[in-house]
Length: 384
Image (cartoon, rainbow, N blue to C red):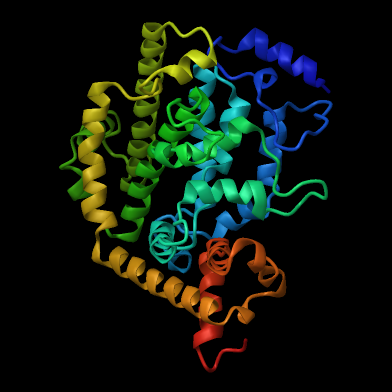
């Protein structure tokens, strides 16, 4: 098996000068002897995959509540799709695919049950006590809440993966509040790749789930220019293709053209900025990994369509509001009577504060466990 120095030699030989190399890592908060044949980022990836928070993603919602059906995406399937897309982009740009994959696998660890509605209500309930954000919660999960090692709290991940969790998407104002992550600096190119892969993945799988659920109709999508264009191309090539198969081909083509455009535009941006190191990329005041202006313009109507027809569909709004009520009722009941919490959870209250402990406890739940807990606390016929 290749030893760590051999892995670093491969990185030196194969990665672009602006990629983040494992030898340049700022390391871990708690010093550890590095593994004999895994790089720091490979080890991070494995720790994330084996974490309890990662496993719980299987029963956390994307758009549809878990019990709505087995077909729909969950946070886990979404995370796997993001990691696959991100690795493809990262490899094409000669970035560090191990770092990219680790960030991708960790990027949703801080999400609550019931998707963004869960995050919104927890933030409202915690607004006077530090608030709630899934990025900072993800960092809290890997730094503190996971308990898997005797020598340190959390997973003791590398600085770069932790930065990728905090600076995921547009959370730079949040990152600035955490002293070790500088708001003025861009995240690594590997983090930027994960951000865009995340957008590509959820846009396209939400179309798939929306069509499968019947909440959006294919004839409505024909009004979206990018969908209509790809549909015409596929119809011309496969005149008698089955409708379901055509849908898969269109979605696959949507992903492919976006990834292709992104790689090309990133190459242009890298050449224009004359990047010589990962530090050069972090010092820029704009993101290097982005779509071309033409593709960005093509994506706008698609995202607007999803917002109007899927995310604001009355059934989704009903699910969202119901989820908020469940979480708020759980939260207030635990705060009023914290002795209902498990013993191990209660022990954290003196150090972390009651509301933060309750918030952590609920945020770590899956859709299913939150619904079960609500039944136990509020249904008089349910066993506790």
